[in-house]
Image (cartoon, rainbow, N blue to C red; front, side, top):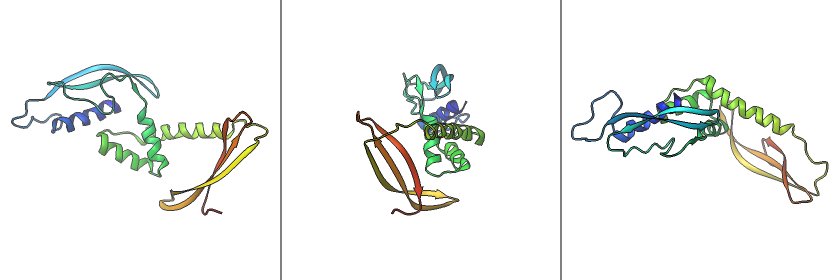
Length: 177
């Protein structure tokens, strides 16, 4: 339903008028129903109805023609969350950009899955010895309690004898040094 509403919003932009309204005078192209298609999402196969127009010029951006995979929606939510947007801000952005209402619970479930994956990564087994270890810091803007500030993200990278690299850890600190 989220994907279909988003593609409906794309169709509104393509035609220049919202669903349910009469087409503007002089415009030949109009809505022509929808066609069903099964896409593979992050959560498994989903059947969606893709809107069509009379002259066949509608090319959905969200799920392009002939595409069967739709794996970017969760990544977009995660990227916004990682940039410090709150669940409500993400919800508002998706409503404005895609014309779709997403519940805060849905957004939280996506971000919770990432947190579970991060916890799994944090508790993974590491090698007992790394011949080479690099340390570096990167300055980034981070939102903390509604305030954006510059912080240092420290990275420890271990290189095994065979050349394989492992990220040993990431730490966020107020200052570098």
